[in-house]
Image (cartoon, rainbow, N blue to C red; front, side, top):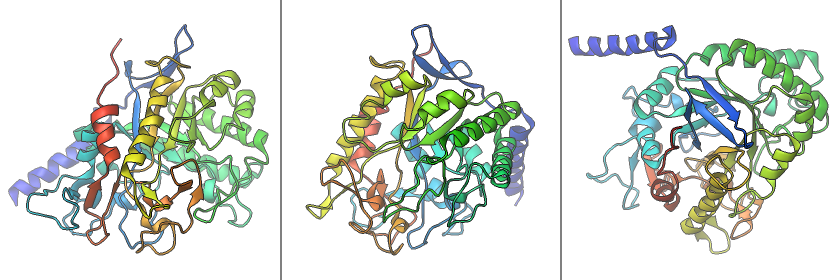
Length: 415
């Protein structure tokens, strides 16, 4: 009992030190050198984003809140399941053998070479968990706000979606963003702020909900409101850059004209196994800002052969990452890449149909893959096997080892 009290006191002390400024927030900058090459720095040291869109969903739970994984404790041991209690099924037999010890996702991410996770919306956050992740494993957070996507933050009517000319909705979104920044700006794990998630698209496919905004119909209003929001953030927090997440480059010219305060342009991109084509050059020509690929990746399911194809998934990721590297400060091309966020850590069974079924073609969308389909429930770097050991079992696919052994096995050189 005495030892438990000491442990609790130490935990509280760490949290108090975090919020009191002893563990001060880092100063993160993006800057361009005389050759027009962009670089992100953390306390004046180079930082290249090797990111994962992380979550650890419980199979069978339909449409969980975006950050439920931070609190899930199925085994009632007082610790979040995925981050601390996951184990690797090395022989893939869907049983935890005596040699398959608990390791936890955060340790697996660190071993993979990941230095950043992306959180899409700043609700239901376990601050103690993220603080511990950063303290023990050195992993930072891109903290996001949907900025009206899916009507999050705007409180708009779902049928009409977010309207960036509506005064009340804009006020709601500003308040939502303000709360995020004031809540987290002094936390040592914060790397940057990310506004939106494909707000420049309005359509939907069978497997995903529409973004539900009018940003593409009223791009000038959207860009001007984005500028207003960026100015507000910088008044509260001058120490972390601000990004906006797009699906396309069609709004870049509006940002160039109306949003001078944006620091980083982010893009969710699924263009094929060789990279992102002309995106780098187009951004450099239309609005010279550093680029973060906020989502990229490929599913592990081959619909033509009705089986998984881990080698293709790994090669797809490899081609994407090499393009990200080649357009970075250390590459030979445009020099405006500051990293990427691979999508995603774990297969998400709840996206299509029943959350108890690992669906294949149901809701898949056309794209540049080996079978011409992206299967939303098979995009994970790792899987949960047959689902019966959820949320603890991890089968590490070939792509995990590709990152660990070939792609993320380096750190940026200091100046």
